[in-house]
Amino acid sequence: MASKKLPEIIDRQEADQLFKQINKRYIRGKRNLAIFKLMLNTGLRLSELCNLKTKDIDLDKQYLKVKNGKGGRDRLIPFPEDVIPILKDWINEKAKRDIESKHLFCSYKQGQEGIKLSPRYVQIALKQYAKKAGIEKDLHPHTLRHSYATAVYQTDHNLEGLRMLLGHANIQTTQIYINLSMTDLRGTIANFTAF
Image (cartoon, rainbow, N blue to C red; front, side, top):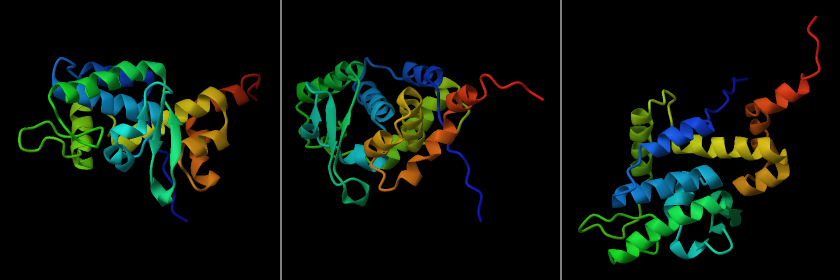
């Protein structure tokens, strides 16, 4: 039987360092900040992010709809209030520049306006920001999904709710986040006296 390695995650401090590298004065920064904040606060898969349509975001009700996610499943994912101004900033920037696209995240470059972002672009951008931030972990977009899932599980220990948020078909897939949640282990041995 092959050994299964625990996935890498980032903590809040590392996430803050990552976000500080993104220059929000420029259109690229506004878009990329919205991408990485949304991924870290919803656990979206990279393909789900790239396929996300603007109409699938409800800023008033604070949720987004993933259509035809992995396994062909749709799901609703709530997101925290502090993500709203960042998403609005990017959406307003698109409107101001007359960038027409059904996709929430798209190119703004001349001749490519409105074309949905490629997964490869998101992967490269994340690695560049992580390097600038001095984060030595090998960050991938899925690292943000693992970080989100671990944080959600640490907050409420609701494995079934987490399974639904992540769009897992099987609860066994979700159980990896129990192992990533060190607070569980610390709580388990809180009153333990060593031999």
